[in-house]
Image (cartoon, rainbow, N blue to C red):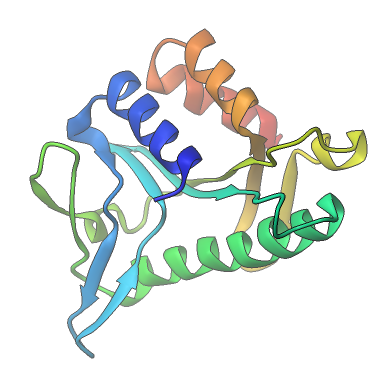
Length: 174
């Protein structure tokens, strides 16, 4: 687990409670017996359903920040979000353990419109044009929020309840 994944798991466990936070998101696709990753992190409280992909930049391996952003954020992370959404359509049972160690069937969230977020930590200052890219629109799954970890952390500190965060994200989409 990457550093930012750990930070978000801690943030969600404290802000949304461990009962509603899912950071161990491997599941078995029962029809084929294969193991899949649902998402890096999920927060699910009734109609409040957030799906996260989380990326850290390793500056030793990646020199060009724009190339990293395009490949890891707009490429790989978007693809992982699409896969996660397709799992909801494909499987009737997606058993994932919350941070209290209890199994829940995330597939029961099928039919809800999840808010999709990619939270990233670039490890260095990004150019303004990259950092200011706040979203990505997929013709398949719709709006995906792009948030620097510092920005997401500030949202969670400023907006107290999960539903305030939901309202803010919906406002942001409009």
